[in-house]
Image 1 (cartoon, rainbow, N blue to C red):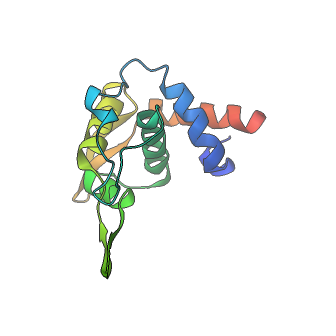
Image 2: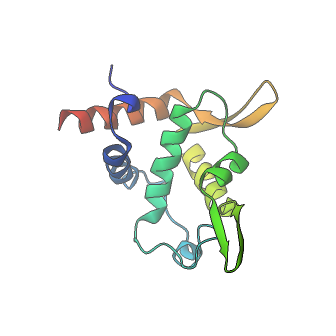
Image 3: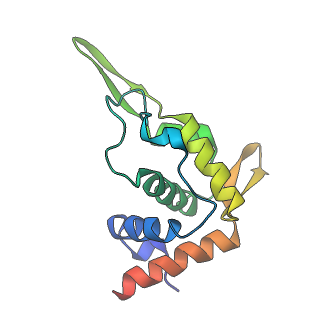
Length: 143
């Protein structure tokens, strides 16, 4: 059985992004063209389909982990170092609003669901989400 561990992330995420564009519940809000993805960024994303790329990357992260993922853990994942000119750089988290809205859209599409496991609250992949990613990984591996 083919899964994401058999396919490179650089090949899987663009294909997954294209498939997510076909899902009607996942649409970028109007404000997404104008906001930065983290406080450390100086400009908004330049690619037009950034929303779908981030959704694909988040789905991949949820597939890889064995416990529920929340907004805070994903904010940490998508953050970066803030350069403070002559002062030392410090790590800052990514935008929580983008991650939260994407999680809600993925949940309405049926790919993720809320759950709590041993005090860890967050969202995990549903069987529908897992089979969706496996199907895309299979097409990437075939050619």
